[in-house]
Length: 267
Length: 84
Image (cartoon, rainbow over all chains, first blue to last red; front, side, top):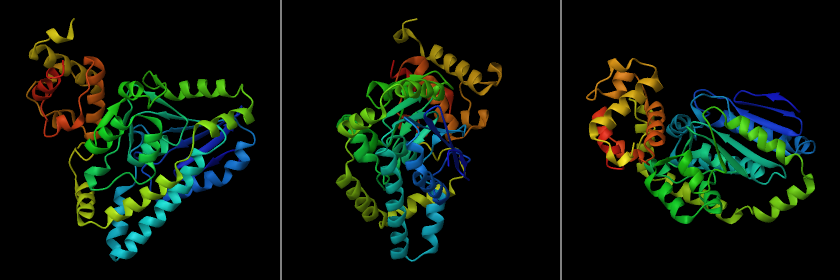
């Protein structure tokens, strides 16, 4: 389908560019609904890719690109089950999300994430599957997982290591702090910074540029320069699942879910 | 203005101006001792927006853990002042 509107996202193709718009209130949290929609998208990708040169991912939610995994859903589901079943469910979810993100990561198209607002956790990991990140001046990037006693589980560590220096990866991972677009540009995470509200326009301009090139050549160049860190991605799933069994994780999730105050997204 | 020459009062004043403009409240309604979460009626996502505005304006990087437990404008100003 060249156009599709799902519960949490939609896509359309025009002039050789596929645009995937995330649209799940309030902040594109990635839970089962978003995963199912993303799976529908990646199932459609072969047909879409045959007629396109570029793919843009962006958000229609004001809060930002994505605030990450749906922690409320994760906590609610984990609470319902015996521990070993909960862990099995988590592993299955991770395998599915990894399949989706790996497919986007290895698309033959040039992929561009137009990021505004919060780009946290799993949302950051989704953006990292893209070849280029265009950051709105008000964008913020963060791996907050350590605050919950976890590590990024959607492939963020291997992908971030692929893109930027290890010292910056350690800073983001071990402090759980967020960085702004200016810093993201400085460390090479973002390829361009756009004025407020202009990230999608800049992404479209960049996509229009890449459509000028021979598709097979672009795809070959991308395969050459952007290996998929498959082994590390599998080990990350194992590490996440090992950490998930610790009591501190459920306690961290409980605190996040029950926090009615203003502060859940701050460290 | 050379950023390093700001006094804490000037920094606080600029923060109040930026907060008023960003959240569209009258500048006269804000004072340095105000709890910005309560006064502006904002949550942590909106606090991050303010943080980004301040970082861009002052040309500094202010790790969000430095604003842990900070809820008034004056203390926020001291955190920024320490980075100028």
